[in-house]
Image (cartoon, rainbow, N blue to C red; front, top):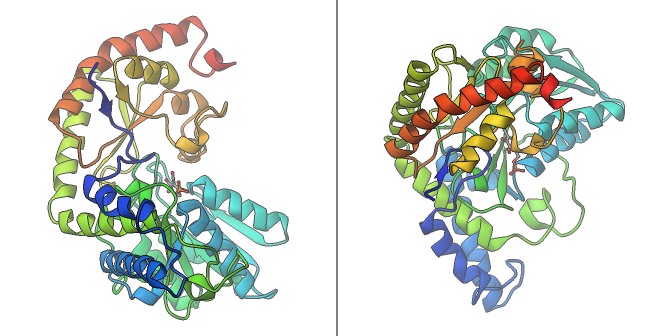
Length: 392
Ligand SMILES: Cc1ncc(COP(=O)(O)O)c(C=O)c1O
């Protein structure tokens, strides 16, 4: 059976170029990049090259790139490291209600340890208002942390306006750009962001590598103690092969930025038009005017999304109910609930996320498959008393 992968916000296939570059670092180039000898220098050069490639993607300086194990670590390091760096006086954190679990849970952890947490609501499209974020800032605010692009809906946040508001008030601003990096242009010379996280496996690299960008002078205390790697901001031997893959993926993404977002937008829009034509009461969630090119979150009122996803999977189509991290959770999506959807509506939602290898064929396949699957998922949910009741 032919397989169709429309879940790139969960993870992406490793780009052939990235894999090819990484492989020698799993075999003959096995050195530790901190070692002085020949084996170490090969690894060190590879890590340096990767750093330059990621810095180029972000229009940042090499020294501002801290390699991590991925988005979760970058987000944890930003929240915990910035709060710790500011001592006991500034213990207030501002996040949005639609943050990824790696921000949300880190913030809750800090709150349990005595930090004050403000969670700014999102509107029906999943966007925060920059004014509401600015209004939440107080003299003891240590950090504002608002994601760039939402993993479930693709909604883009007004990061530029938020960053300006933070600058005016002298408060560091971190953005989780795990879903945005490599998919839309990010120019940190112009964007008023102090810290930014990204993840290799969301952009054609390998799992286990990511970046926390920290603008020169940003307050940050490392959260892993140990060796002096990453300019003493993140201890631990680097995952050289995965960093090499991340570097190449950054280069490829940068080259593709003039064309690939437009191609994906057209594919995504075709998917939505096709779905809407065949299932007229389908509803799109998120902000169509401010959206990642590759993401479409759709709700099929009265259907159970999980049933729908299982039906798609049996036909070889991989899509998702939202965050891969909450798959298997009995709770409906926290992000969709924060947007004002009720539990039945959140349960009836599924996400399609496209990537570099997505084609018309993927999209047309989904458009053809959905009508009978939606009808079946509706019947099943109705028999159980609604999508929510079908889970109880
Ligand atoms: C917005 C966002 N932030 C952070 C992460 C975590 O990244 P990683 O899987 O690299 O830990 C994800 C992954 O789903 C994400 O979508």
